[in-house]
Structures are given as C-alpha cells and as structure tokens.
Image 1 (cartoon, helix red, strand yellow):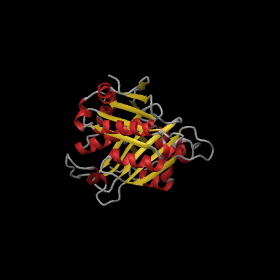
Image 2 (cartoon, rainbow, N blue to C red; image 1 turned 120 degrees about the vertical axis):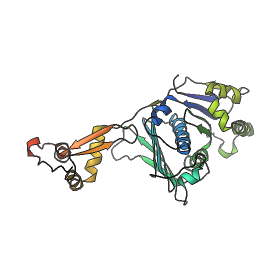
Image 3 (cartoon, rainbow, N blue to C red; image 1 turned 90 degrees about the vertical axis):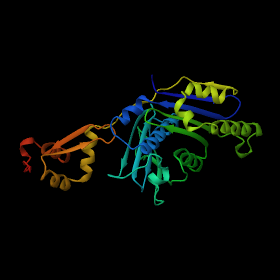
Image 4 (cartoon, rainbow, N blue to C red; image 1 turned 180 degrees about the horizontal axis):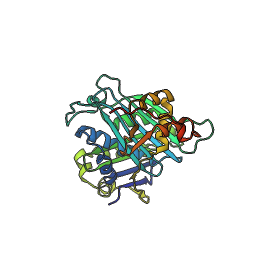
Length: 306
C-alpha cells in the first residue's frame, strides 16, 4: 500500500487541510538505524509534519526541518522536497539512556538550549539567492505545538497539527486558516468554522491516530462538513547523497586536513547518515578534488599504517 497524503478544502470557509499516512517510507528510514522508542516517536512525528508542510510549497525545492538538542538527542533532521520525497536521521549521544516515555524536553531541551529550524531551499536559485532559514527556541512540549507556534510567528498562519508515530507508521493531520481580505475582521461564521474544526481535531487521541487509516479519519472528523477533496499524493523515500556531494564536503575541510588524514589511512571512508551509502576516497581521488587535472602518477603514495 502506498504512503498517502490527502489534501482538502472546506467549501464555506478559508480553511485547508491535509492528512498523511507514511509507513513504507518510515520503514525504509528505520531499517537503516536502530533508534530508541522515544526517538522513533519524535522523528516520525517530524516526518509527518515535514510532508504536511511540504505539500504546500510554492517553489521547486526542499523543506528541511531540524531540531538541535542539548539532551541525549543532539540532532533530528527531516528533509522533504516538492515531490514529497523524504529522508530523515537522528543523532543520539553514544551510551545515553533514553526512557521509552521521554518527553521532547527531556530528549532535546534538557538545559533550555534546544532550537527548532525550518529551511526553505529552492532548487533553481537566482544568482545571489540564498536559502531562507528561520530558527527559534523550542516553544512547546511536543513537535506539533512547536511547529504551530513557529508558523504563527514566522508565517502569520493559524495552523493546527496532530501527529503520531510508532515503529510501524507515522500519521498526521493539518488544518490551516487561510488569510482573508477581512484580516482580523473576518466574518464571524468563518471564525466559527475554524474553531469548530480545531475542536474536532482536538478530539483525536494518539492511539486513534496510530490505529486509524486517513480515509477513515477524514470520515470521522469531517463527515458533517462540506469539503472538496483533491487527488492524493504519495510520499516516498529518496536520498539525494552522491559521490560529488561528499567530495565537495571533503574540499570544505581543506587540503591540509585531508592530507593529514590520509597519512594514517589508505582511504577516507564516509557513510551517508540518511541512507547508509558508503563512499571511499583514496589519495588519487582526494588529489583530484583540489587539482582536477592532476595525473594519477603525480600523486605521492601515502604510508598505510596497520
């Protein structure tokens, strides 16, 4: 069964919504790394949220969602492009004990230094154009609340999210109140519709989100509403790593540091944090990074220590 993202619009009010169900992609991510249960929950919720937010990107590019932590979890990253291709990873402190029921604060905000960041990175940038990044403190006790607060502050959009994940599936529901010409003076019936739909979403429980497919969820939540449903989209796993990108990363370290590393090992081995793909660069490969026209026989051989 394909992973699915379903968009809809409320006919009589400026409100749009989405539901997402990610299982196959989530299993591909989890197959590459064995995370503690609480970390799986957090990363899976971020995965659902990234897909829900990416579905409304107005450019050909990528959204990168990051939580930088100061607890046992130091980093969580989810990337999703405008084609709903996803990848995700987390960095957990070696040997850290992570209780199954650890909260967001305990995992990534133990000393109040946790940060949440969203980066919007267009694929075809204009000359001089940079990716847009917003970074804020972790304002909320769960992923959904943190993102809701970010969207209200940074995008001035009322957004409601309900997220859940376990080791089998990640699901999420999004509601967003669209701007109207009336602004804060929007008609009372529009505000009433928004408040009613938000209350319906608040009836969702974590267990219900995990055990109910999104088609059933839509019927349960919005059976009394007049909504327009669009053709569903299908998220999938995709890693954008490549040998060229790894080479560019090595170039950023500088020639001196690379040569020092090669003095103690025959090859530099680097594995992608997202997909596990392994790349190796020997002395000849590294020489070509800094001097592309260097002939192979002009590269001095390094001593290999065993």
